Amino acid sequence: MSISNILFVSVEVPITLTKAELEREFPGLILTTIENSLVGEVSNNRFLFASSFGVLTFCNFTHQEIGSILERLGVPEALSYSTALLNQDYPMVLDTQCEKPQIDSNVIRYNKFDKSVASIISLAISQSVGLEKREESLEKKMYESRLIYDIVENLKMKDRKRLMKFSSSIAKERFDILSQLYLLDKPDIIWDDTELESLYNQLSNQLELKSRFDIIEYKINYLKESVELAINLVNQKTSEYLEWIIIWLIAIEIFFTIYENFIKIHP
Image (cartoon, rainbow, N blue to C red; front, side, top):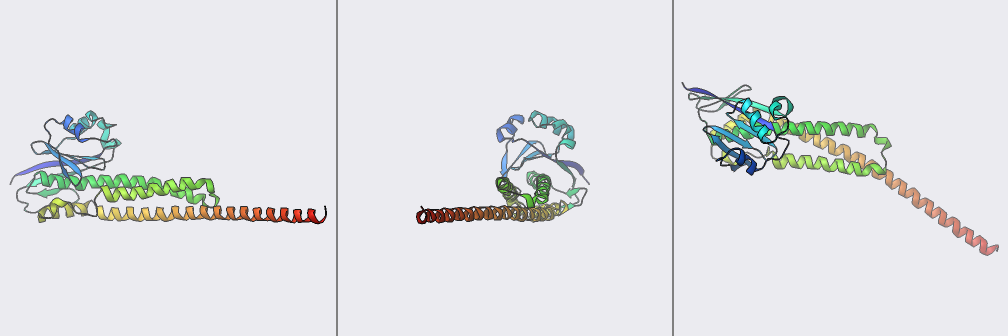
């Protein structure tokens, strides 16, 4: 029985990395596109997967090598990425006796390892880190929403602009999740390969991608309803304010009309 260990590590990258920068760091690297992400074989059975949503996944690199590469790419706090940046790792055991992919919370077991397998595993783990980024972002928005609720009765017209900006940020958050993380669509490369599909589905279940997405969806809907309530309240107050202005203008106009008529009758 031939067994070897392979480590996948996905790291949040808080800066934008271009294809040219990655190719400059790894001369000879040929990057191809999978699910709007870039994947390339750096050396024999060592792959790099760069997602379109700011996550780099390293396949078959040591933690020290990863820190060094991130530092050369200009990523802040690269050498302490394991504590300073969002990251997740997943080991794989290449086992010739494991005819179908088997995954539990601790390890991936499979008898095959190539670019397609590395890409599917990298995609799922990077999606998990991408979700974690969104989860943190939504927690901040939930806190901001709670602050709005604390002063909801005291909101005024001047707060409408801030509420509209907050509402736009929630809509953008949802759009980015749907357009970038691809959690509702299976990767194209698994359609004709049942084992790759099983690999992705098992890993997706272990990382709880769908359930975490559902929670995010629920929070976004909650935030949307909350900010709409606050905006409606401000609009109502604005409407009442304008109505009182109109009433006072009409009252003033009636007063001056009566006054003019009185002057005409009693010059």
